[in-house]
Image: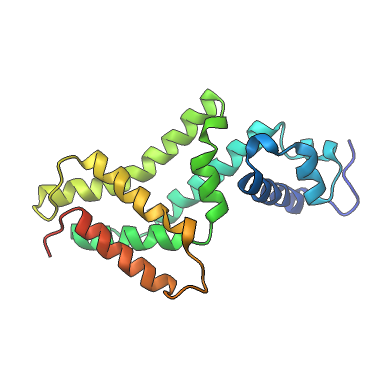
Length: 197
């Protein structure tokens, strides 16, 4: 099928993903059709299949790209030797990275149930890799006597859930700036793990 005039793979592909992300975050995966995504992009429905084989692959790609970019950004951080400094850095990074991506975060958590088993397994693997960064920080903190935790895995999930929740309510016009919110949450994360400071 021919592309619409003015449509180019390097620009239309990202526009397809962006439109799908907006629509799925707003209406849910099950309620969004390929025809709606095409209308949002301004192409014929059949043209979408030049960029993705089906809606399931599109959903998977949205989650995969989000997680791969998150992992790459996290890997670029320096690694403080002090567990308290490392946890503070992780908390500030997590909030700073996710606060601008509420749609991607919503999809990454709320639409997991709509992935095929193999796609679910692939996304869960990426999520585990990200969680492992925090789990390593917490385990090192326990080993050094900096943190007091009954279960590192439970604490990892609790801290990530707390930090991710910011995307549900934060607005730039609020009483606190991004940096102030990140600082507050970093402090709460340290308190939550019983940091000895």
